[in-house]
Length: 145
Image 1 (cartoon, helix red, strand yellow):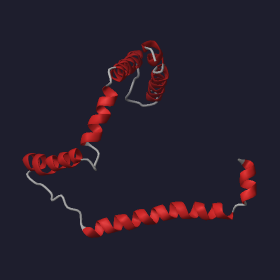
Image 2 (cartoon, rainbow, N blue to C red):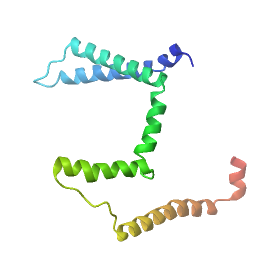
Image 3 (cartoon, rainbow, N blue to C red):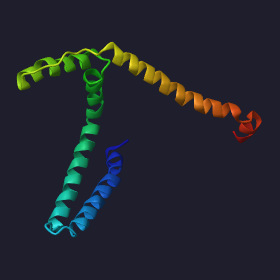
Image 4 (cartoon, one colour):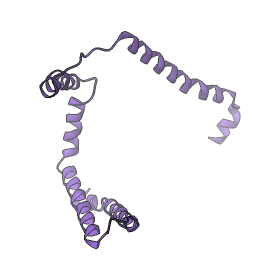
């Protein structure tokens, strides 16, 4: 995809945000203490344009892929990086900033409840539709496909 084509995809975003700004300015006419002006609308549209241009530039430079890699490494709970970040926040930053910390433990009862709830929800989500599907005539279902 070429640069002009990918930038054209952002036109609906700019249009919808400008329309949202117009709607907000129209609504502000009914507030007694607020006077909307054309400068407000122009600055909102300019802010949208700058935001879209920055998003397009970040996307073109591969920033989205780099962010996804960093997010997967540091913020996904099952990764070692996520656990390390959680430990740093709880044990170091909380203690230094607020003077307290918490233990990083989960009671066994909570784990058992979570597993039972997840299995029960999965069973209900699968059993009820499966029971309904089992009662449907097979021939009629195949003809509809």
